[in-house]
Length: 251
Image (cartoon, rainbow, N blue to C red; front, top):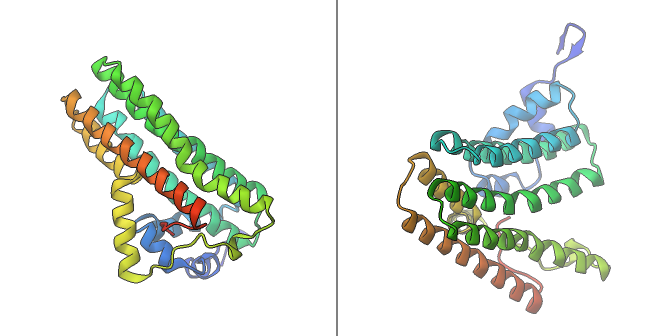
């Protein structure tokens, strides 16, 4: 379709050309974002934005959540979760745009990994510092240090294994790092993993911040519990990769 001499791609065309091969599995993993991303991709495609430009937008949106957390006002600070959810949508969009235009770049993939490695620890630190500013309790700063470490290791435990595969000349396709669960089992596994993992951590803290929960003790207990859970997840992945070369993962 042409509008004022500019080609406008239809939604049907955008869907058919940008959908990934494992769309169903991805939709189970990102049970909200994967169903919403196509509408933003439709806009990006018709604006002729490159996949790399969408990746930059994905980073800026995610980083804005850190800035919201610097607010003392709970309703404003809680917008960090909206920024997080939107940045996950844009994370899916950059791949859809790349598939639509059939333009894939090494930088795009590299930037994607770097963004996740940066934002995960920053969100953990930002949430802890928000509580420190609210309660003036130095223990929240100690928790921030803990989240900076686990946030880095959550990405590093997988990415460093990929680096080891590369050093040995082993492709991911020939390695065993994959999840063979499908259907309801995959959905349940992803739901449980999200609840005890970083997604659950963010959602719980969104609720606490939005309603300005005032018990510093309960909040510290919640943060410590998730910190311990993240450390256990890292340990399980590390031991599984070291011993078997695989771990049960969200697709």
